Image (cartoon, rainbow, N blue to C red; front, side, top):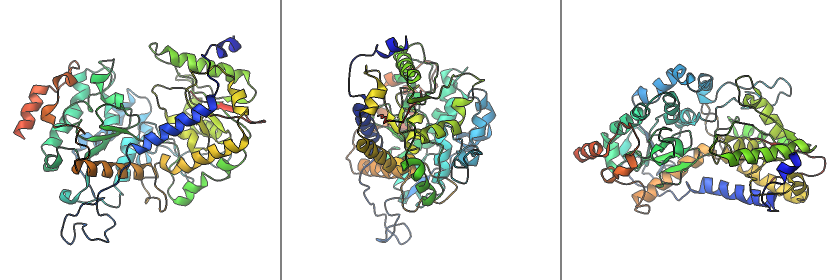
Length: 481
């Protein structure tokens, strides 16, 4: 039966090559969407950052001092989140990194080395804490190149998602936009120089475009929300306002030296296995393809001595797929990690595996080949080049410890995101992105058709108008689903 399942996929021979190309394109797109040349803006005056030797010229960021109900109170009231997303409270410690790992077996994955049990949806809090130590903050909004909005949209999603109506789900987002649009900082560019981090996928904040009218909030679709730049785990590619950034991984270095350690022997050295680590989750009934893909991958993995399977059933009694030490040890011992689709198109596991130097593989639904045979056919020199490319990407996939100073010689995911924001705002200011966002008084009614939503187009118009995986001999495959 396993052999029959493995042969049920449509034919396509070059799994590994296509997987590498696909993930290279994905990563290029993931980061290049936020890239661009930052235009330096002179503000005049001795102390406003206009001096030619000012390293912060064109990089100043003003942070809104939001009422605590939009951030601090959400974290303080994390017990309410726990009612709907078990265990979230334990992930708000250590500035959002979660509890430190304690590797009592090998002594490698430890707090001292920068390893924490970080939740995949904790980026709102991590990013805000990192922003507090940004070297070019300003208290004068007039000289700021961009304005940061520290609203914890991802945590807000969790606390009211299950058992509440859309009016309640949208309440904080609606109040936020109302608060922002009354500020002078907003009126300067209609909010197009504002940005925030919503640490979930973009689809969780665009209910009007979802098939499920009861899923998520409408932050990205409502007036005001459309004008801001919003960093999410996965972009919806709609309207151009939300941009993807990496998921938080378990690794958060405090120094360049700590970061460099992850690319040492544990990553570059000989790996005895190629693991296929599978997080086996129950997929929704309306996406049977995900189930079939995972079933085929699991069947091949079980039939191969070269594959290591990390099975992770989703139930309260299972801890294996919620134990970072098990996951990261598997990735560090493997060369290739297959990554079938998860609950969305992208998945946090891809970034964890790459931090461990494991070459990720994408969707295998288009292929009818023996994964092991394809991997063994790839020349070792090609494998090494693929791994080196992954290692070069590692710094840009990480979020450094927000309690420490920034990395001295390397740019992490925070640095890349901020540079991208500054570049985008500069292009908008120069008229190069004239279609970005849109005046809130021109938003169309059909965007707000979700049921029981608190905001309505007519009310908002009145308010605004007033104001590859590869396996060589003696190596195994890892699968994670």
